[in-house]
Length: 550
Image (cartoon, rainbow, N blue to C red; front, side, top):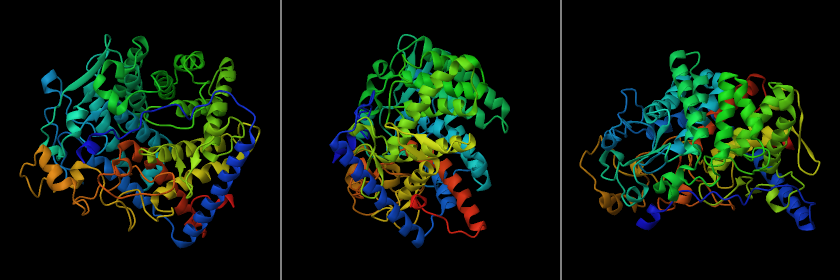
């Protein structure tokens, strides 16, 4: 039991899904494509049946998703805290090192503050607001969304103590995972770890720069002074990341077993440069992305996943946006076209429509239509893919482009791109073979035994009696009953490649939720809520999933 709780929540990031170059499709490849098309038809059928049965309540899903981030807060909680079963925690973080590192987010069901996934979470929350902020505001959730972002960026400001110094982690994963305690009772190590000139971390510094640059755009109108401060930190962090290059897990050994940077730091440098270009409009950042396109892999890697570690697909889609909008100099065009080709490889891989590249050229689908990358916390790839597909379909529509070019010559209508994005969101919400919502607290059937220390133990406000490290395992972890606290808005790791799911607290591969699972869905729920409202106003039934493909 305890060994399982101490294990990693994430599978190491390998590039098994990455393909350089194209090959003619073999007979086996054609057969695989035929199977994929069969899966698509099954998904369409399930979507139609789901649409006829019940339309999803996207506004409810949006409200719940933002509530989740309050459950993940570390530090001194405000009077406006809505998740009342949580209390103050981590109030001495950074004290031993002489810095104030109170605040930020716990990434999942434990109490370590990992900087890389936290920064990616804030980047995706900010991107959600940049693309769909008006939809979030129309649903009455603007204030909560801004609070969710600011809780992270306030922490990053604290953690960036010098131009070339960033605190990357608070807590030790090994000791933390051998305890099952509420965060309010923590007795585990709160050692803090940093990157600096002598111990570089271009990946975490780059991602934090991206998060703060993206967030600066979100706060530009409502809080211009704060937006300027965020942008200042972002520019300093990017300069630090680029000047002192290195992987943060080579400088901080403690992170290797949990959030190792398998993809390296080059994708984060491109990612940060693109966000700084979007936030500032300064040509030097786009020059960087174009000049480093080949040597940093931006136009070389054909990627099938997008995650806290692997940013290439996001880089390629942001670069393609600049091409589609004409926001570039003439000498940038040919390189941006290469970025766009790789962006469309990702899109087509999700659709299963790349005819060249062999078995790894497309993303596997479950029988119920879920995009499947790997066993451990697969839902993170589902939610991030849904967001990228939706954003890219919007960029294409704005540019008047109606098709996507896939490897091997096939073209796909942009409507089909968004239909798949919507299908993945609806799968998360319950349009799946099990009829389970993997968004906790949504609908009548959802996971009740989420692998989450705070949610699985009696609330601090009901019982302030101290619960020790092993006492939590003995009295709470192994209980078969539902968690006493519902982790509303969390998106758990989700089902396996056959749509099978076991709601068990020990099954951390499937029942642990992470902040970066939910972050992309804030924008998606807001957009789909607006679309569903428009469909109702025009007298049409909201269409679930990929029924439009029929």
